[in-house]
Length: 401
Ligand code: GMT
Image (cartoon, rainbow, N blue to C red):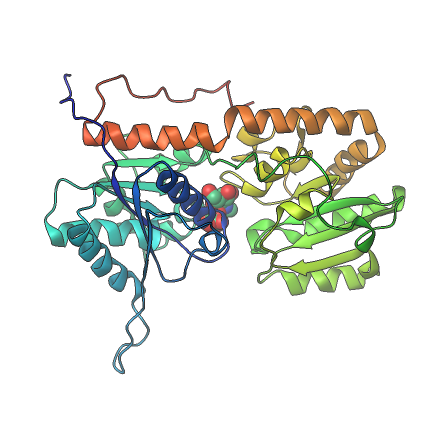
C-alpha cells in the first residue's frame, strides 16, 4: 500500500487523562511533556491539573484545559464524561487537533469518540491507550461495557501498556485487531541509582534494610500481603517497611501492622510527589498485586537500580526478569515473597547485580526516548506522514520471559 507522503510538521495533540495520582496519568503527562519539548503543541484535557505538570518546567507548547463538571439541581450527579466530550469537541475545532490521545477508556476514550462524532471531523485521529482496570474491571461492567467497546472500535488505534493487557483487551472487547503494545516508560535521568536524596537515618537504623512499597492502596494491590511478608522478613533480618501512597486499603494494612505488633517498624508515609527520593533509600521494592498490567512502581525502582519482588502471571512478567532483576512469586504467597526478599537482603552481591541488571533493562527497553518515539511513529503513521514500515510489534521473548 502506498501511503501519501506528507512533510513532517509539529502536531497539535490533545491528551485526555486523569490528573490525580496514578500510573496512567503519569504516563500521559510525561508523554505530553516530552512531545512538547520537541516542538509539538500539546493540550491536556483533565478535571485536575495533572500532578506531574504541577512540577513541570514551563514548556512553551503545553496547554491545560480544565474540565469542570457542570452541576445542576436536577442532575442526580455531575456528568463529567459529557463535559469532557464537549470540551474535546471544542478543542478539536479551535486548535485544529491532529490527534486526540485518550488514556484509560472510561471516560476519556468514550468522550473522545463522542467529541469527534459531534464535530464530524474525520481528519483528527483517535488513539486510545488502555492501562489496566479500564479493561479488566471498569470497562467490563454493565454500566460501561457497550460504550467502552464502541470507543475502542471508534479509535484509529488502540495501544496497550503490555502484551498481557493487549490480550485481555482483545478478548474482553472482541476486538478485530489486537492492540499495539507500547510499553510504559521512565525518565532514567530522574530515576537513577545514586546518592541518597533523603537522610536514611530518619527512616532506618544503619544495620536495618529498607523494604519499600509504592501504590494507590486499592484492593488489587493486596497491601496486607506486603505487611504479612514484612512480618516474616523482619524476624530474620533487621529491617523497616516504608509504604508510600494512600487509598482505601491503608486503614486495613495499618490495622494488620498493629495487630502483628510491628507498627514501630512499619511507616505509612502517604502521598509523596518526589518518589525518586525513596527509591534512593530502598533495598527492595515489593508489589504484591493480584495483577498489574504493567507496574510503574516496578519500572521506577528498576531505573533507580533497585531489585523488585512482585507477583507473577500478569504484566509484571514483561517488566521484571525473574532471577535477574528481581523475583516473581505467586499471588498471595507471602512465604515466597519473604524468601525472595530475604534472598536479596542477605546476599549483597546478588542485590548489587540485580540492581545493575534492573537499571540496564529499564534503559534498554523502557526509556522515555525509545517509547516516546514509538508513540510519535504511531501518530505519523496514522496521519500518513510516514511510508516506512510500521514499527514491529514486540514479540514474546524480548521483553517477556
Ligand atoms: O488501571 C488502573 O488500575 C489504574 C491505572 C493507573 O492509572 O494507575 O493503573 C494501571 O495503569 C498503570 C499505568 O499504565 C500500570 O502501571 C498499572 O499496572 C495498571 N494497574 C493495574 O493493572 C492494576
